[in-house]
Image (cartoon, rainbow, N blue to C red; front, side):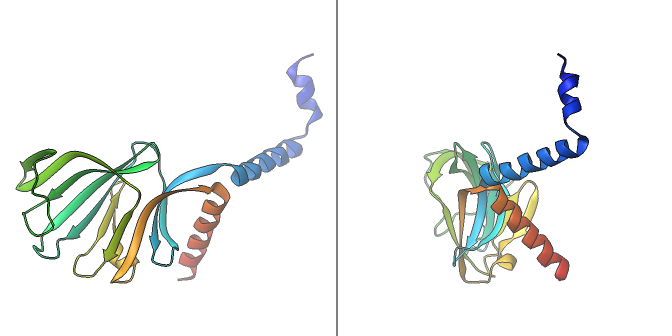
Length: 178
């Protein structure tokens, strides 16, 4: 008996329905690891699917020196790691130790190979610090996404694909109304 015999048992319509059921079922069962930004109330304000090797950066103006600071992060084994920093001058609250690999490149101090595991990243967003989020070559101005003087938490979460999809649809619908 060939496979063609069994294919004759199913109509194109039943195959489409079966595939739709499988896809919907998978949305309820499968999960994604997400990098999220939550506001102080715990609402997800931004999210992206992450994976091992996923990289992003947070930039801001140092509150005392007024110079740009960049912190570089990576996701490995479902954990957040601070991997490097870059800043223009020493100042209050800026690193001074030579524990890690450090160098001066393009008039900027760089510290690399930090590899410090973090449970999450908490930030206090302000207009004067102009916090930015750099991911996949796109820069997002956090100080315009979240109200000034508000805390945000950057974290890794696991969520069902259906909830991720629902949030995406709601965001799209909201953007269409504006």
